[in-house]
Amino acid sequence: MLPESQSFDRVLSSMCTKPHPEAVEAATRYIATNPGDPSTFPAVSRLEDRAISILGEITGLSSPNGYITAGGTEANIQALRIARNAHPVQNPNVVVPESAHFSFQKAAHVLDLELRTVPVDDQYRADPKQISRHTDHSTVCIVGIAGNTEYGRVDPLSQLADIAYDYQAIFHIDAAWGGFALPFTEHDWNFSDIPVDTMTIDPHKMGKAPIPAGGLLVRSEELLDSLAIETPYLESSSQTTLTGTRSGAGVAGTVAALEKLWPSKYRSIVNQQQENAKWTASALSDRGLDVVPPELPLVAVDLPNNVFNELKSSGWRISRTSRGELRIVFMPHVSRDMIREFLTDLDRLLPKTTSN
Image (cartoon, rainbow, N blue to C red; front, side, top):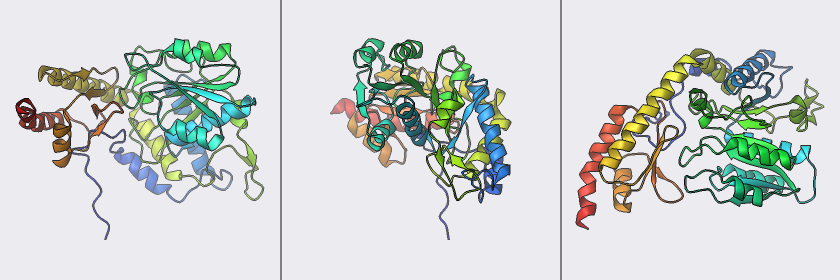
């Protein structure tokens, strides 16, 4: 007998959330299909075209190319693979801010690329001067983050794009988490705002699609074609994806979530969670704690180690930034009542620190 699935009642650290019920139902219907062999499974192939079309609308890409990946890691690996293949140079390197997701370390290792990790500024954003200082004519890709995983910050993407253009490098934006929040902000972040070449955006995060459902979007078909290899024993003659067999469930679930929620319901979710994040940041500041205020729906707060450990022991699913702060990610399942319960537990523990 299978155990019950985990409740999200005390999950504050995850960038995944409860999928939409209609997305779960659609995923179940297509669970045995493989979009990696589109000629054999044409129905799920058409659904993938639909998914990429809507993701293109979300990200300002009028003629979108790309595919539904297993997640942001695969999309980031493929983006760097595009950069390496599109601009063959000796000793290629990739320049990323230190706020970049750890998937870029995996990608650089797999693809034999030098990864140049550059310090961020005092607001946890990429510093264009530092990025430029580390870029040269062997740089095949510059990476900007649109909603980093530790602080939810958005890099100065236009400036990074200009640097990439000057060096004829691919400009990649990792919007795996932020991509479903940023359409409802004033940020310049998408393909219509900035000369972006490739982008990661994950429907299985704020998009409420079932796992696995990441996304890779590419400005031009030529860039995507740089990944193509022949597949002689399949009905289809070539393949641009990293994995061969892929999840039809992820594709179908993505389409169901996008068609149900884009744009108005996503707007409502993001606005509500941004308000929850601001309210929580204020409540934590009122308790005398050092808070990194939210730019997107994510709050980081400096807590004593014993308080963090006690909260974790009491069942809160929490995690730290690399600098040690508690991070709270305001995914759709995080309610104001849940935060009130968290603050009640926090208040019970805080007096212990003042007496130590």
